[in-house]
Image 1 (cartoon, rainbow over the protein chains, first blue to last red):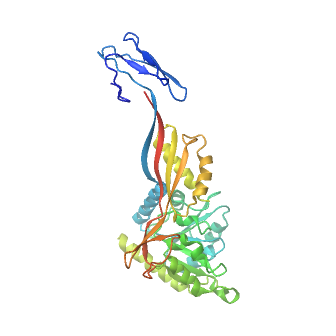
Image 2 (image 1 turned 90 degrees about the vertical axis):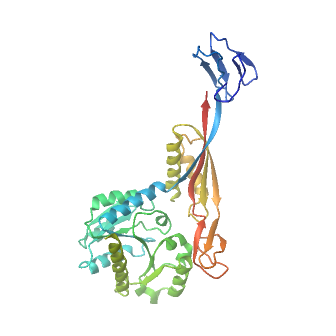
Image 3 (image 1 turned 180 degrees about the vertical axis):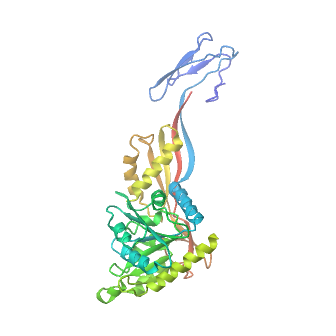
Length: 284
Length: 113
């Protein structure tokens, strides 16, 4: 019996080709030919002379369906989990800062580093499509920084953070701030291994950003509303913005700050201190 | 345009699993709340699959509607966007479907002799 298709033609080996014509095979010469539906001609030879009943084997094109059930982002998620373990093993607390371009991530970050210099050892991974401008600004504060240029990429991913961390080599018991590429869409999808995502929205943008870019605001633990010193000059309804953010993410915490005047920054620092000490306690 | 990277991932996953065998069809599940545009995936697929076992494969995208389960009353309701409100007035819910990003299955062409 043919092991491929299960046909059995008794004592006499026989192959039926695609035209329905039987091809006899003599036991002494076990060559036979098939014509496949696509015109390919395949010739076989049977060398199992010891078989009492020569087996007829058909060549066929089979379409086999293979169930994969494979997560498309599995590779990134695996690397992110590795990064998370790397951070945990070194008792390093990592934050992923995300916003649209120009919301004030770098200004907030430099101010934070300067203000918390004596309390926290902050290290920075800067993500931008091009230039090392932001890394230079951070470097001026005296903290360790690496710049990742994503080129055509619109977000940082876990593999980039893995490489960045090798370069940065942050010390034990420190904080790593990851400044993502300015973009309110893609960074929300890519886990980097951070402990929390923070979205930064400036009052010079529209107050409806949370419902326009819901994935970002849903993924974040905190929304920092920046540039609030400009509120007298712009049409921005703070209450409505917070309402939109809570529609998308009822648990989101909102911190209003101005990195220029310093208003509200103490709440941001309190949050960092609270969440990082919780993390440290859990790791111990 | 994160769809380009996502499509590259799709192609890489299939190339890895097909072990050099020509792929005729690929089924991908994309949740409607996943922030991925199926049209953009289809557009990128033609480019990303060139020169691979997927070159002539038919891409089938199954869109999975968003579904939420309310924290308060347990009602399941359909979501068109990643936020909404339950009929009981609660905005606290778990997304139970609609965030899928999955290579579901592939159909490979094998010549069996």
